[in-house]
Image (tube, rainbow, N blue to C red; front, side, top):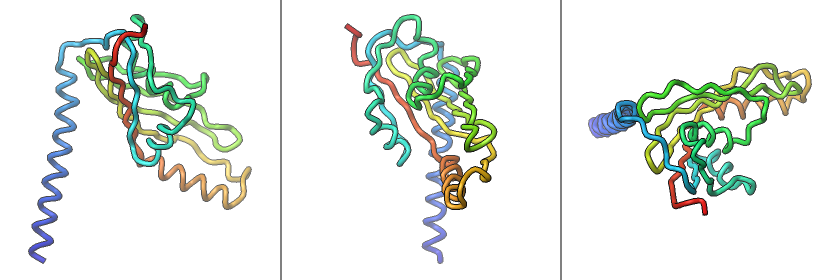
Length: 180
């Protein structure tokens, strides 16, 4: 039992160190003088377990993006919206910028055939002169319309929604040169 307690302490210490490092990185970005990413071509990438792999393998998902001068300040928000292929009826809310820390959310109505309510894509991230990072989580504020589906469909939808609540996806864009 003594060995397990020692291992648990080390795992707890590592988890605490990682949490503090993540908070410190976000805080450091908030304290930096604000800078917008430079215009140019950016290579796009995602990570985030199975969901990140599913998004990464989308054939229609662009691998690069040409950032124009007028898009620089809202690039993180644009990345999130584009990477999820969100419907035009979604509404956007961008938080006031703190240094190079960016945050916001995109709220989309649920498919009325399946649910009542909405889903929100909430993100935090940071800008630098040649990159953008955004960490996205999905929150569901919807009630399934189980009267419109079979018991098995309802079970699968509930399981899918429960699983999505625990998934975070990281989106990154790194400048690789000019657009032309």
